[in-house]
Length: 433
Image (cartoon, rainbow, N blue to C red; front, side, top):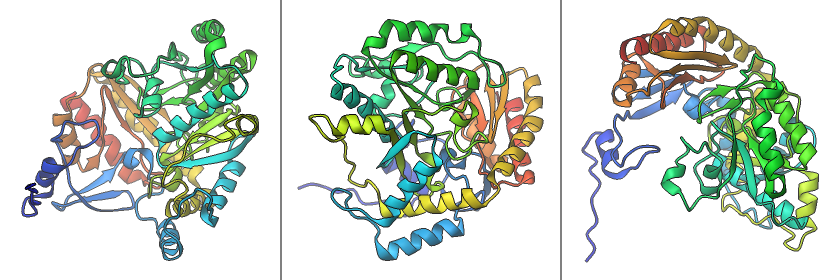
């Protein structure tokens, strides 16, 4: 007879968690761990009564703050009509309206939207689109992707294969991951011009492998979880030119940068270029529900439609979820009617001013800011068991990784709260790094 373990509900929530839950990038028993009871605006309330100012926007997604009434009202109204229906052979207003609005907002040339559940899956779909496109054109040797070191595109298998080969877990899955082509990380910083030497390695690899490449995939301007590196718009512009010269598709992964994080609605606007495929996620719903989108150009859609397959071979069960689409529409409402650009500009100026002193600390290798992103890079990796509780004790939620201590706060954060975040970063780094 199978024995079932009874829930230990008398124990504190973190202890119950350690007995049953497996957290991201953590061993089976996560430590340290902090239990959240509620959230509102830019504050998280823990079950022990402490309040934390959220400097992470819940992994960069909660751009309008928690429990925004406009988003909640939209989801509540949709819940009363239609929470979800399969998207195979059926459609509904929230999904169609969202796709229409995304196409109206996105860079020119993108004509179709494929909805999915998460950013990693959006990248998987983008890679499938590229592979099916070349199959449809009879170029069956074009099955690899080119990217740059320092990137991060997700944790599913195809997405992981284009993450940085040193930090992207490749060694754990060697032999199972597709082998892609990697060029050097862009060395030109955001404020610097892109010179021919900066793209020389990329150009040589494009030339050497063009006949086998389906696409180039990049995070425009900001490399996120692979290193929080900001590179020159001129580099992105040159990549577009090279893809056109070699007839290779260009995929922009704007899952982390989309919807205003860099000061522009999409990071590619800094370079005034458009991709053939665009991946969106994270802030798409304002962080309320999980939703992602992959946008494609008409030439890709038409080639696949006219091929023997006749369809993109992908179909998430919860594709086009009505509640998530309603949340996304409400989030776009807020971006259209509220002064998010002014808020991001103010955040940027404050981050520049208040993080600058960190550059004088012995443990610090670099300080960089772009839009509502502030990064302090250390010489050595942080000790998470020491640094995470220190930030909580300081009343802020900052989640470092590797050698990076960074903040990506909600756009609605006030100056006084942001000062507490940056002050905690300076103090904790000076004491513990």
